[in-house]
Length: 185
Image 1 (cartoon, helix red, strand yellow):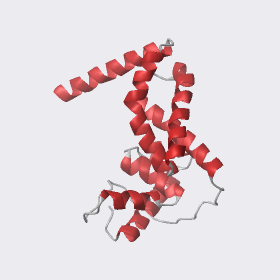
Image 2 (spheres, helix red, strand yellow; image 1 turned 45 degrees about the vertical axis):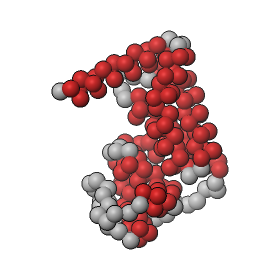
Image 3 (cartoon, helix red, strand yellow; image 1 turned 90 degrees about the horizontal axis):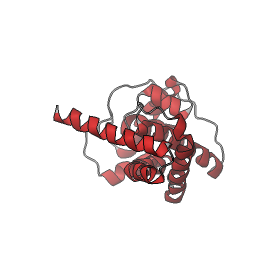
């Protein structure tokens, strides 16, 4: 009960900051930025694989969020809303930074469930393997397996069909199995 109460207090605190920021309070928005910028940066970095581009994405995400704040539903999750903006910004910047590739055709069977490594692997090895995945597979893996979004939520953020998202996740897991030499469930 204590955890739920602490979470409610946090939501109330964040909701109050959002309301103040919606009223033009830049200091309240700055506090929201400080609270969420780290996770937004991590998401942008995993999607762009470029630290400078990720920093640009974070700035653009919060600029877009500031402009769109009046449309934000306060009862919604601010972090999920910011992640959606960050995904859109990252995809747009990535398209501008790299030539467009035809999407790979993958008839892979979708695998549901949590992403678990059954053999110990160094975190650095995992991060390197994830960074080396094709964009679509990496995006699906990052949003679903690392950030916990459902297939539907991840697909909506990426602008793809849910089945495509599942196939990309299956592809990502298969490539990681191959690259890391471990079983990825």
